Length: 335
Image 1 (cartoon, one colour):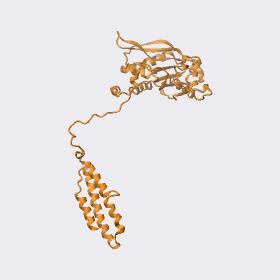
Image 2 (spheres, helix red, strand yellow):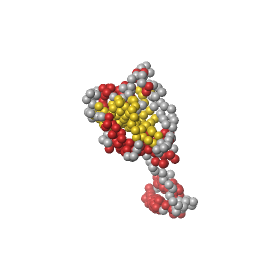
Image 3 (cartoon, one colour):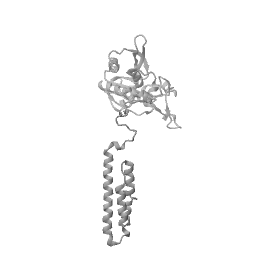
Image 4 (spheres, helix red, strand yellow):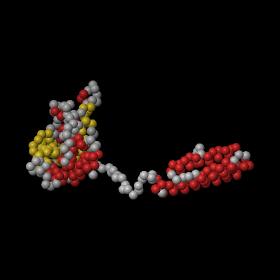
């Protein structure tokens, strides 16, 4: 038996270990559970009792020698990086370019909008994307026959096949958050509502079935249309610069009266054009009544803008679909 132990000892001493693969082969042959050294310990029961002491001493010496060799070679291989290089590797070459994560242009634009309104004293409110009829339409002064209730504009979710009145919708704007906020918090209310909204529209260069909005609401005593105008002008100047050319024109929304839209001039003086960037107005008295706020005591203004439109104007993007294609060639431009 001692001759067998001596033979294993010689194999350990002569085993070539120059790579990680050879190191693993050494471990498997001698030190693993099914290796030769554990097998020697397994034979202990067959050794006569009077010889077990000397046998165990020899086996322990072999084990310690193998373990010491394994540990020293492992440390050597881990510290010498050149041993891990193949013959074709050239360590003098520049390191490969690393790809870093970055914010999507929509996220960058949304953060920019949030920061502007936070500086103007607005807080941020959020709400569910799946809404009921009251919060998405009724409380916002949409009469039952309003076109926005038509299937061509709205994604309806059938909650109860036996009762269409319980149908839910994927919210078509973030205005329902205004309703929820006013029901929970009495004036003064001053907040913006960012989030995703959904419309059942054809996907083209200018429209998409999913987009992002930021709406704002300010309700207090003696809020005026002049305050709304000042807020909108400060916003576009902080986004596009003080030299931005804008115009404000009358419009119509069921939930504001009077209503207006704001356009900015895009392009040079000769070849540019007016582009609408947001809608706004004074909160309709019926909306205040729906949330138990007295319109004789309080007034307010609201506005809403599409984040995609703001981003497209800011970065000069001419196709909204580019924002959703996840093409790295496009996204890498917005570092």
